[in-house]
Amino acid sequence: MAERYVVTGAAVVLPLNGGSERYLYRGAPVGDGFTPEGVKHALSLGLIAKVKAPAAAEKSAAEKAAADQAAAEKAAADKAAAEAK
Image (cartoon, rainbow, N blue to C red; front, side, top):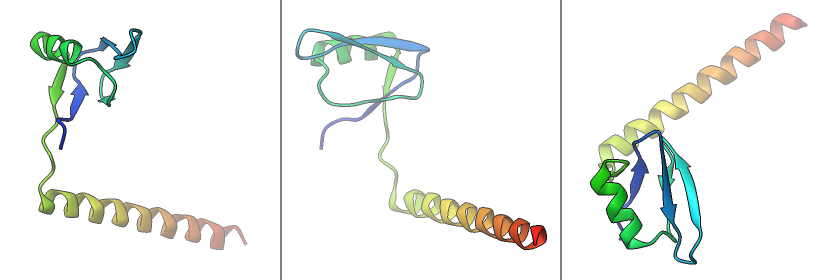
């Protein structure tokens, strides 16, 4: 599995394998297609960081939280719809 990175600086400009460049902003995932040299340089400057793969328990907890949030939003929408009648 390839390393995964995320932008930690305000912005970073990374060179693409095809010769052009792409601007990425804080929080954006760094996908495929960037030159290894560009990624290495951005890492050395602290503009991007490796993303830790979530453990199974963390992933499960995040999925449960998302499901709970969706259920709460649906319940609130259903209640609002019932009160509007």
